[in-house]
Image (cartoon, rainbow, N blue to C red):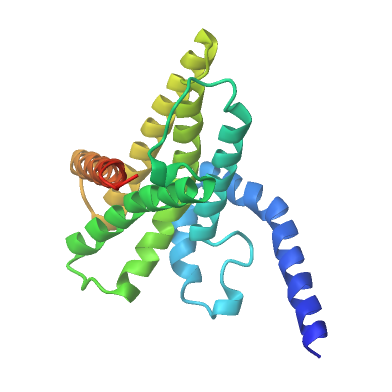
Length: 226
């Protein structure tokens, strides 16, 4: 009986992994094509039963995590073509580096979600935070992908790659700010200028938080005895 249960679990896991081949690009395409609709979709789906949630796409946190996995895979493929970079000891392993990226890129949707709740005057709890955080994960994924790929390309010893990499970073930032500005404007009833300033300020705070986390890791591991 235990063996049959194990086979069933493996079967479900295999189906889940294979289904990602379809639903990941579908989720990415829908997010790039209709980011506002996908953010509303994330909110609505959380009201369904767990078994009925996100049946047509990947769940937002999973979508973000798979995106970071893909970026990590691309980095491993380009590692011999990029400029040497020595990470701190704690991030020397692939698993630790991937975990750091997951935490770093989760700070952005977290702060955006907190700002939305505070402006609405809503109570900040695990339940009230979930919906805006999930919706923010959808648009953070393509932003993280383009930003990371752009950063990798700037490390390639090639002028064309450097130009393309910088273009990726610029387009990613512009796209993200525009999408977030529209969301803040429609969801909070702000003017375009107010929404854009709020987005830029939150983005700056997120970058500072990510920098501080990275600095803590670098200096923390540097202080550890050999």
